[in-house]
Length: 77
Image (tube, rainbow, N blue to C red; front, side, top):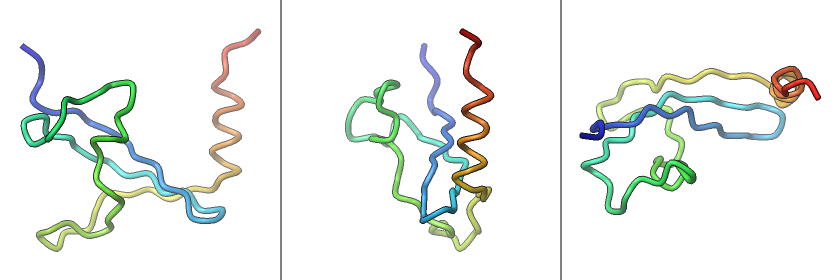
């Protein structure tokens, strides 16, 4: 039996700033099937406050820091 939710880390870019959020996709609340190859189709638009007024879990970094991370995360050729 598959799980009832998927944990995701949506990334949003605004200029040189990159915001990374924690998001839970509840599979029973989707109007279409969850596609693990296109998870962004099941994630809501970025919000910094939820419907209950709670601040969203979000980390901020820079485009340069993401580029550096990706460059070092690549497997050696």
